[in-house]
Image (tube, rainbow, N blue to C red; front, top):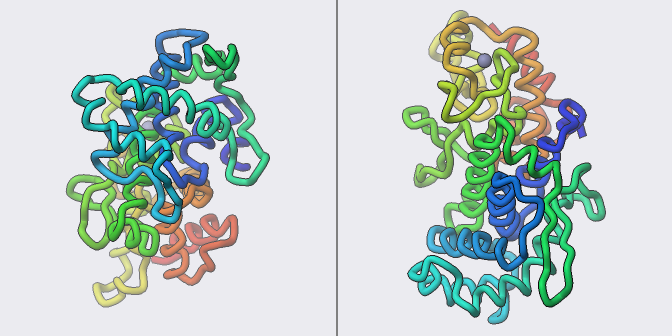
Length: 338
Ligand SMILES: [Zn+2]
Protein backbone atom coordinates (compact mmCIF):
# COMPACT_ATOMS: atom_id res chain seq x y z
CA UNK A 1 0.00 0.00 0.00
CA UNK A 2 1.32 3.45 -0.94
CA UNK A 3 0.58 4.84 2.50
CA UNK A 4 3.01 2.40 4.10
CA UNK A 5 5.60 2.59 1.29
CA UNK A 6 5.93 6.35 1.72
CA UNK A 7 6.86 5.93 5.38
CA UNK A 8 7.62 2.26 6.11
CA UNK A 9 7.66 2.59 9.90
CA UNK A 10 5.92 1.03 12.89
CA UNK A 11 3.94 4.24 13.19
CA UNK A 12 2.49 3.72 9.70
CA UNK A 13 1.58 0.13 10.66
CA UNK A 14 -0.20 1.51 13.70
CA UNK A 15 -2.11 3.97 11.54
CA UNK A 16 -3.06 1.20 9.12
CA UNK A 17 -4.46 -0.81 12.03
CA UNK A 18 -6.28 2.03 13.77
CA UNK A 19 -7.37 4.30 10.90
CA UNK A 20 -7.88 1.99 7.97
CA UNK A 21 -9.39 -1.21 9.28
CA UNK A 22 -13.05 -2.10 8.80
CA UNK A 23 -15.05 -1.78 12.00
CA UNK A 24 -18.26 -3.43 13.09
CA UNK A 25 -17.39 -2.70 16.73
CA UNK A 26 -15.13 -0.19 18.46
CA UNK A 27 -13.02 -2.68 20.45
CA UNK A 28 -9.91 -1.85 18.45
CA UNK A 29 -9.95 1.75 19.63
CA UNK A 30 -10.35 0.82 23.29
CA UNK A 31 -7.46 -1.63 22.96
CA UNK A 32 -5.31 0.87 21.07
CA UNK A 33 -5.79 3.52 23.75
CA UNK A 34 -4.99 1.06 26.57
CA UNK A 35 -1.89 -0.18 24.72
CA UNK A 36 -0.54 3.32 24.11
CA UNK A 37 -0.93 4.19 27.80
CA UNK A 38 0.77 1.01 29.01
CA UNK A 39 3.64 1.39 26.53
CA UNK A 40 4.09 5.09 27.30
CA UNK A 41 5.14 4.01 30.80
CA UNK A 42 7.97 2.10 29.14
CA UNK A 43 6.65 -1.31 30.20
CA UNK A 44 7.60 -4.38 28.20
CA UNK A 45 4.78 -6.48 29.59
CA UNK A 46 1.50 -6.13 31.41
CA UNK A 47 -0.93 -8.65 32.89
CA UNK A 48 -4.00 -9.02 30.74
CA UNK A 49 -6.14 -8.30 33.82
CA UNK A 50 -4.37 -4.94 34.20
CA UNK A 51 -4.74 -4.04 30.54
CA UNK A 52 -8.39 -5.10 30.73
CA UNK A 53 -9.21 -2.35 33.23
CA UNK A 54 -8.59 0.73 31.02
CA UNK A 55 -9.92 -1.22 28.05
CA UNK A 56 -13.26 -1.97 29.71
CA UNK A 57 -13.54 1.48 31.26
CA UNK A 58 -12.88 3.13 27.89
CA UNK A 59 -15.72 1.12 26.39
CA UNK A 60 -18.23 1.79 29.17
CA UNK A 61 -17.49 5.52 29.02
CA UNK A 62 -18.14 5.50 25.27
CA UNK A 63 -21.25 3.33 25.62
CA UNK A 64 -22.92 6.24 27.36
CA UNK A 65 -22.32 8.48 24.32
CA UNK A 66 -23.01 6.32 21.28
CA UNK A 67 -23.47 2.69 20.19
CA UNK A 68 -20.25 0.70 20.05
CA UNK A 69 -21.50 -1.83 17.54
CA UNK A 70 -22.90 -1.49 14.05
CA UNK A 71 -26.67 -1.89 13.94
CA UNK A 72 -26.11 -4.63 11.32
CA UNK A 73 -24.24 -6.82 13.82
CA UNK A 74 -26.12 -9.23 16.06
CA UNK A 75 -25.56 -9.02 19.80
CA UNK A 76 -27.00 -11.57 22.20
CA UNK A 77 -27.46 -11.49 25.99
CA UNK A 78 -24.03 -12.97 26.61
CA UNK A 79 -22.33 -10.66 24.10
CA UNK A 80 -19.53 -8.67 25.71
CA UNK A 81 -21.24 -5.37 24.86
CA UNK A 82 -24.47 -6.55 26.48
CA UNK A 83 -22.55 -7.32 29.68
CA UNK A 84 -20.75 -3.98 29.44
CA UNK A 85 -24.10 -2.22 28.99
CA UNK A 86 -25.54 -3.88 32.09
CA UNK A 87 -22.44 -3.19 34.19
CA UNK A 88 -21.70 0.33 32.88
CA UNK A 89 -23.39 2.46 35.53
CA UNK A 90 -21.96 0.54 38.45
CA UNK A 91 -18.47 0.40 36.91
CA UNK A 92 -18.48 4.14 36.28
CA UNK A 93 -19.54 4.75 39.89
CA UNK A 94 -16.80 2.46 41.17
CA UNK A 95 -14.20 3.97 38.83
CA UNK A 96 -13.19 0.43 37.79
CA UNK A 97 -14.93 -2.52 36.15
CA UNK A 98 -17.30 -4.62 38.27
CA UNK A 99 -16.22 -8.23 38.83
CA UNK A 100 -18.67 -9.42 36.23
CA UNK A 101 -17.46 -6.92 33.65
CA UNK A 102 -13.81 -7.75 34.34
CA UNK A 103 -14.50 -11.47 33.95
CA UNK A 104 -16.32 -10.88 30.65
CA UNK A 105 -13.49 -8.63 29.45
CA UNK A 106 -10.84 -11.25 30.24
CA UNK A 107 -12.89 -13.79 28.30
CA UNK A 108 -13.53 -11.58 25.32
CA UNK A 109 -10.23 -9.71 24.77
CA UNK A 110 -7.92 -12.58 23.78
CA UNK A 111 -10.59 -14.26 21.65
CA UNK A 112 -11.76 -11.17 19.80
CA UNK A 113 -9.93 -7.89 19.61
CA UNK A 114 -6.44 -9.10 20.48
CA UNK A 115 -6.61 -11.61 17.64
CA UNK A 116 -7.80 -9.04 15.12
CA UNK A 117 -5.94 -5.86 16.00
CA UNK A 118 -3.14 -6.40 13.47
CA UNK A 119 -5.46 -7.42 10.63
CA UNK A 120 -5.85 -5.34 7.54
CA UNK A 121 -9.19 -5.27 5.83
CA UNK A 122 -8.50 -8.16 3.52
CA UNK A 123 -8.68 -11.54 5.31
CA UNK A 124 -5.41 -13.03 6.43
CA UNK A 125 -3.28 -9.93 5.78
CA UNK A 126 -1.62 -8.27 8.75
CA UNK A 127 0.11 -4.92 9.17
CA UNK A 128 3.91 -5.22 8.81
CA UNK A 129 4.74 -4.60 12.51
CA UNK A 130 3.47 -6.37 15.62
CA UNK A 131 2.66 -4.40 18.72
CA UNK A 132 2.10 -7.17 21.29
CA UNK A 133 1.94 -10.91 21.85
CA UNK A 134 -0.35 -12.65 24.31
CA UNK A 135 1.57 -15.20 26.38
CA UNK A 136 1.24 -16.83 29.81
CA UNK A 137 -1.16 -19.54 30.87
CA UNK A 138 -4.92 -19.52 30.60
CA UNK A 139 -4.91 -18.88 34.37
CA UNK A 140 -2.85 -15.71 34.06
CA UNK A 141 -2.34 -14.20 30.63
CA UNK A 142 0.51 -11.79 30.04
CA UNK A 143 0.66 -9.26 27.22
CA UNK A 144 4.19 -8.63 25.92
CA UNK A 145 4.42 -5.12 24.50
CA UNK A 146 6.81 -4.88 21.56
CA UNK A 147 9.60 -2.38 21.18
CA UNK A 148 7.75 -0.97 18.16
CA UNK A 149 4.83 -0.14 20.42
CA UNK A 150 7.03 1.47 23.08
CA UNK A 151 8.79 3.51 20.38
CA UNK A 152 5.62 4.95 18.93
CA UNK A 153 4.01 5.50 22.34
CA UNK A 154 6.96 7.63 23.39
CA UNK A 155 7.69 9.32 20.06
CA UNK A 156 7.18 12.99 19.25
CA UNK A 157 3.98 12.01 17.42
CA UNK A 158 2.37 10.08 20.29
CA UNK A 159 -0.02 12.95 21.10
CA UNK A 160 -1.06 13.01 17.46
CA UNK A 161 -1.68 9.23 17.48
CA UNK A 162 -3.93 9.59 20.52
CA UNK A 163 -5.89 12.43 18.92
CA UNK A 164 -6.27 10.43 15.69
CA UNK A 165 -7.46 7.36 17.55
CA UNK A 166 -10.04 9.25 19.49
CA UNK A 167 -11.32 11.10 16.39
CA UNK A 168 -11.58 7.81 14.51
CA UNK A 169 -13.43 6.24 17.45
CA UNK A 170 -15.87 9.10 17.47
CA UNK A 171 -16.44 8.98 13.69
CA UNK A 172 -17.00 5.23 13.72
CA UNK A 173 -19.39 5.20 16.70
CA UNK A 174 -21.33 8.11 15.22
CA UNK A 175 -21.71 6.12 12.03
CA UNK A 176 -23.25 3.32 14.16
CA UNK A 177 -25.89 5.65 15.60
CA UNK A 178 -29.37 5.40 14.15
CA UNK A 179 -30.34 8.39 12.02
CA UNK A 180 -27.08 10.33 12.06
CA UNK A 181 -25.17 7.18 11.16
CA UNK A 182 -27.30 6.59 8.11
CA UNK A 183 -26.79 10.13 6.87
CA UNK A 184 -23.03 9.88 7.48
CA UNK A 185 -22.78 6.64 5.57
CA UNK A 186 -24.86 7.91 2.64
CA UNK A 187 -23.89 11.57 2.48
CA UNK A 188 -20.50 11.71 4.16
CA UNK A 189 -19.48 14.49 6.53
CA UNK A 190 -19.57 18.28 6.33
CA UNK A 191 -17.10 20.72 7.85
CA UNK A 192 -18.15 23.53 10.15
CA UNK A 193 -15.60 26.19 9.21
CA UNK A 194 -16.31 28.30 12.30
CA UNK A 195 -15.24 25.56 14.71
CA UNK A 196 -13.17 23.44 12.29
CA UNK A 197 -15.14 20.39 13.32
CA UNK A 198 -16.49 17.58 11.22
CA UNK A 199 -20.27 17.34 11.46
CA UNK A 200 -23.08 15.23 10.03
CA UNK A 201 -24.91 16.96 7.20
CA UNK A 202 -28.40 16.66 8.63
CA UNK A 203 -28.16 17.84 12.19
CA UNK A 204 -24.77 19.53 12.04
CA UNK A 205 -23.81 17.69 15.17
CA UNK A 206 -20.10 17.87 15.94
CA UNK A 207 -18.30 14.54 15.46
CA UNK A 208 -14.54 15.26 15.60
CA UNK A 209 -11.99 17.98 14.90
CA UNK A 210 -10.79 18.26 11.30
CA UNK A 211 -7.14 18.07 12.33
CA UNK A 212 -7.51 14.93 14.44
CA UNK A 213 -9.70 13.31 11.82
CA UNK A 214 -7.28 13.69 8.90
CA UNK A 215 -3.74 14.29 10.18
CA UNK A 216 -2.95 10.57 10.47
CA UNK A 217 -3.59 10.11 6.75
CA UNK A 218 -0.86 12.66 6.03
CA UNK A 219 1.50 10.82 8.42
CA UNK A 220 1.19 13.57 11.03
CA UNK A 221 3.09 15.97 8.75
CA UNK A 222 2.40 19.58 7.85
CA UNK A 223 1.06 19.64 4.29
CA UNK A 224 3.11 22.72 3.44
CA UNK A 225 6.60 21.99 4.83
CA UNK A 226 6.40 18.22 5.30
CA UNK A 227 7.72 18.38 8.90
CA UNK A 228 5.79 16.70 11.78
CA UNK A 229 3.17 18.73 13.60
CA UNK A 230 3.23 18.22 17.36
CA UNK A 231 -0.18 18.82 18.94
CA UNK A 232 0.08 20.80 22.15
CA UNK A 233 3.47 22.21 21.12
CA UNK A 234 2.96 23.60 17.60
CA UNK A 235 0.31 26.12 16.66
CA UNK A 236 -1.85 24.31 14.15
CA UNK A 237 -3.92 25.81 11.32
CA UNK A 238 -6.23 24.11 8.86
CA UNK A 239 -5.17 25.21 5.39
CA UNK A 240 -7.39 25.61 2.34
CA UNK A 241 -4.91 23.98 -0.01
CA UNK A 242 -6.69 25.69 -2.93
CA UNK A 243 -7.55 29.13 -1.49
CA UNK A 244 -10.78 31.00 -2.25
CA UNK A 245 -8.88 33.66 -4.16
CA UNK A 246 -7.69 30.98 -6.55
CA UNK A 247 -11.23 30.15 -7.61
CA UNK A 248 -12.74 33.61 -7.54
CA UNK A 249 -10.01 35.13 -9.71
CA UNK A 250 -11.52 34.11 -12.99
CA UNK A 251 -14.94 32.82 -12.14
CA UNK A 252 -17.98 34.99 -11.63
CA UNK A 253 -20.39 34.31 -8.79
CA UNK A 254 -22.73 32.47 -11.17
CA UNK A 255 -20.05 29.86 -11.92
CA UNK A 256 -19.77 28.75 -8.31
CA UNK A 257 -21.99 25.73 -8.84
CA UNK A 258 -19.55 24.21 -11.30
CA UNK A 259 -16.46 24.49 -9.11
CA UNK A 260 -15.59 22.05 -6.35
CA UNK A 261 -16.47 23.04 -2.78
CA UNK A 262 -13.30 24.40 -1.20
CA UNK A 263 -14.65 24.15 2.36
CA UNK A 264 -14.76 20.36 2.16
CA UNK A 265 -12.52 17.65 3.57
CA UNK A 266 -10.69 17.04 0.27
CA UNK A 267 -9.24 20.59 0.29
CA UNK A 268 -8.55 21.04 4.01
CA UNK A 269 -5.24 20.03 5.56
CA UNK A 270 -3.58 20.59 8.93
CA UNK A 271 -0.42 22.70 8.75
CA UNK A 272 1.83 24.60 11.13
CA UNK A 273 0.18 27.97 11.74
CA UNK A 274 3.31 29.90 10.62
CA UNK A 275 3.51 27.87 7.38
CA UNK A 276 -0.14 28.66 6.75
CA UNK A 277 0.35 32.41 7.37
CA UNK A 278 3.32 32.51 5.05
CA UNK A 279 1.46 30.67 2.31
CA UNK A 280 -1.39 33.17 2.49
CA UNK A 281 -3.41 33.24 -0.76
CA UNK A 282 -1.02 31.59 -3.15
CA UNK A 283 -2.09 28.48 -5.07
CA UNK A 284 -0.54 25.18 -3.97
CA UNK A 285 2.88 24.12 -5.22
CA UNK A 286 3.27 20.82 -7.11
CA UNK A 287 4.69 19.22 -3.92
CA UNK A 288 1.68 20.33 -1.89
CA UNK A 289 -0.70 19.02 -4.55
CA UNK A 290 1.07 15.65 -4.52
CA UNK A 291 0.85 15.49 -0.70
CA UNK A 292 -2.84 16.37 -0.83
CA UNK A 293 -3.56 13.74 -3.48
CA UNK A 294 -1.66 11.10 -1.46
CA UNK A 295 -3.46 12.09 1.72
CA UNK A 296 -6.84 11.82 -0.01
CA UNK A 297 -5.92 8.49 -1.60
CA UNK A 298 -5.08 7.24 1.93
CA UNK A 299 -8.45 8.41 3.26
CA UNK A 300 -10.05 6.41 0.43
CA UNK A 301 -8.55 3.30 2.08
CA UNK A 302 -10.34 4.08 5.31
CA UNK A 303 -13.94 2.88 5.63
CA UNK A 304 -16.99 5.14 5.91
CA UNK A 305 -17.77 7.95 6.38
CA UNK A 306 -14.62 9.94 5.52
CA UNK A 307 -14.12 7.84 2.42
CA UNK A 308 -17.73 8.40 1.44
CA UNK A 309 -17.20 12.16 1.69
CA UNK A 310 -14.28 12.04 -0.73
CA UNK A 311 -16.02 9.58 -3.01
CA UNK A 312 -18.92 12.02 -3.40
CA UNK A 313 -16.57 14.92 -4.14
CA UNK A 314 -14.99 12.88 -6.93
CA UNK A 315 -18.36 11.82 -8.32
CA UNK A 316 -19.80 15.33 -8.31
CA UNK A 317 -16.80 16.36 -10.35
CA UNK A 318 -16.98 13.78 -13.08
CA UNK A 319 -14.90 10.92 -11.64
CA UNK A 320 -16.02 7.43 -10.68
CA UNK A 321 -14.99 7.77 -7.03
CA UNK A 322 -13.79 4.20 -6.96
CA UNK A 323 -10.60 4.00 -9.02
CA UNK A 324 -7.25 4.38 -7.25
CA UNK A 325 -5.29 7.43 -8.36
CA UNK A 326 -8.26 9.62 -9.20
CA UNK A 327 -7.18 12.21 -6.67
CA UNK A 328 -4.04 12.93 -8.66
CA UNK A 329 -6.03 13.69 -11.83
CA UNK A 330 -8.74 15.59 -9.96
CA UNK A 331 -6.29 17.89 -8.19
CA UNK A 332 -4.37 18.55 -11.42
CA UNK A 333 -7.65 19.48 -13.05
CA UNK A 334 -8.65 21.84 -10.25
CA UNK A 335 -5.26 23.48 -10.61
CA UNK A 336 -5.91 24.08 -14.30
CA UNK A 337 -9.39 25.57 -13.70
CA UNK A 338 -8.95 29.32 -13.39
ZN1 LIG B 1 4.88 23.40 8.29
